[in-house]
Length: 146
Image (cartoon, rainbow, N blue to C red):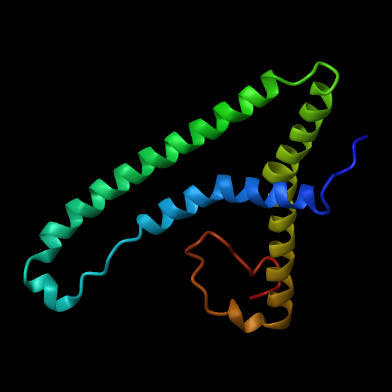
């Protein structure tokens, strides 16, 4: 196992890699923000001009984000294609674990925690659901919260 030649080298590599991937997406996010059209300008007809600009900008941003995602995916595929055959299973195992955590375990834990938080809130504040019409399809009378 080779040790890092510079103290904090792996941390620096992680930070630079993260900024290299997320930086362009953050810039695109900022560039896609919409300018406000105030009430007095609406009467002047600026809305008729602004909406097509927003639509064009949205389409451009979607295309640029898609292109960036494809570029990152191609980079990852090239990385995995050039791995040594002894190291490839380790990287595939690591990638599988990260994807499993990010796409399955993490959201499931958040969903369970937030559901428990709502149940605790309902236990302490039962007045929150009194008088609700059930338009969301949830009936709290069966659970004792009516």
